[in-house]
Amino acid sequence: MPIRRMVAALKGETSDQELQAHRRAGAVIYDLLYKSSQTSTWRQSPERAFERLCIWNAFALQLLGDKILEAEGRLDPLTSGYVSPQTHALVLELYLASSEWTQTAQLAQRDPDVRPGRRLPAALPDWKQARPYPRVFLEALLEAAAALQTQVLARLADFERLPNPTRGRPVRVYTFPANHAEMVQTLRRRLAQADLKHGHAARLLGPSAPPQVGQAVLKNLRLALSGYYQLGQWMAMPDLIELPKTPSTRPPSKPLTDLWRYTDPEAVPQLRRDSAAKKALEDMWEADPEPQLTQAFHEQIEAAWSQGLLGRALKPSGKPYGHHRTAPFAPVLVALEDLDLCGRSLKEGQMVALEAYRVPRSGEFRRKLVVLG
Image (cartoon, rainbow, N blue to C red; front, side):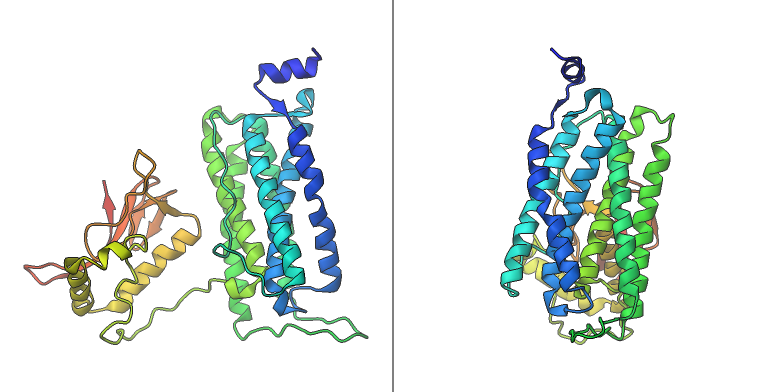
């Protein structure tokens, strides 16, 4: 048995031949990206926004897979051609997802009306997490995140510039909306958040870092990668950019058109059949002296969710906890890291939910982010 194969077997590593096959097949996205950049940029053809988004997603996922394989082979040359189970699982998911987006982009080139069967902006594919995390795996993932960061920075610089159509040939130029400056500010804020996660992961994974920090490194890298991935989608399809909302200073008109706006969406079908729940919501809206503040709380929670700071709280069985027991029957969430939200300082792992209701006896109206358990 060759020494390389023997060392790989001792370390529990597997051949990367399957990954290399997917890598070769997925390399078509680089050619597709080049041709797209030669014929149409985001500012020259707004009607092709979804096609650009598909190309970005496929390119970003392929780039991550390629960079992880390259880095792992360079960082651990003794077992070149073999990868850890963590690397194999992650890179395979990246390549499979990239292939799906590439095919969707090719369909969108032929039919501009093609749309995805999923919510946009799309999330990164999930991958199985195993412990402990090999240092080489984390270092390779860190390098891949830096490569994606570079791509996002280049696209942001392009997004900030005014349209500059090529001379000598007619092109349809994208007209910047009035809120372009606000878009750029939002993109830069989101980039700063992703960069902070990336930088923190790099500092954690210092030369003398103990193996125990692996989970924290991976969590920060996942948040950074999610941020970069979403930024590329926002710039490809600017209509997706989630601009900060300014809470209305006027109470909403009554009766309200959306009684369930703060309720856990998954619980709404069941609660609609519950007369007591409906009465509690009607009472909440009727009693709220400052509904604009309740709306502001809700928007802060949504922003933290979109930034990867909050997630669904899960039971030990893996099922969601569901909705909170009091109005507005909001979803039970969990803090994915320490953060300040709605006037509260939360610790990583704390479960929270929005409460807004009138106390039956005193008539006092309560509006707060409550910590559960």
